[in-house]
Structure formats: C-alpha cells, structure tokens
Image (cartoon, rainbow, N blue to C red; front, side):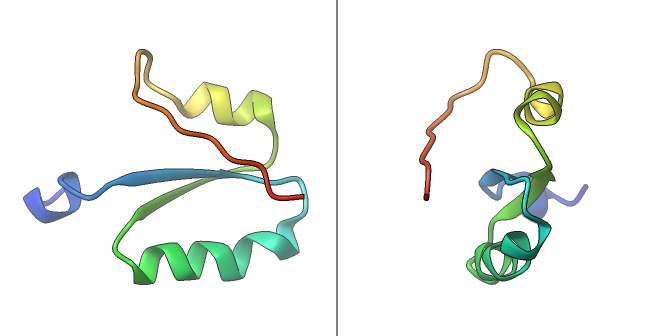
Length: 60
C-alpha cells in the first residue's frame, strides 16, 4: 500500500441490499476515502481491527 493510500480515511459500508452500495461507494471513493464493503454486521465485524476509532450512522 502506498503512503498516500495508507493515510486515507477508511469507511466500512454495511448493507444487505447490493444495489444501495454502488453509488454510495463511488461517492466516498471520489471524495478520497478507502471503502470497505460488508453484506451484513457479522462480516463487518470480521473486517475491523480492534480497537479502532469508530463512528456509525444508519440511513433508513
């Protein structure tokens, strides 16, 4: 991983509706974020290195 990529903020997007992910991930990547995707909460938790700073939001 390059130094520039390593310094980017990482966002983990969790959604069980794949069609919802495309536009959101594209927008985040365009803003310079590294985007990780998980289809559910269990998969999301498996991707997290603990302890980690975390913020969450839910869009319903």
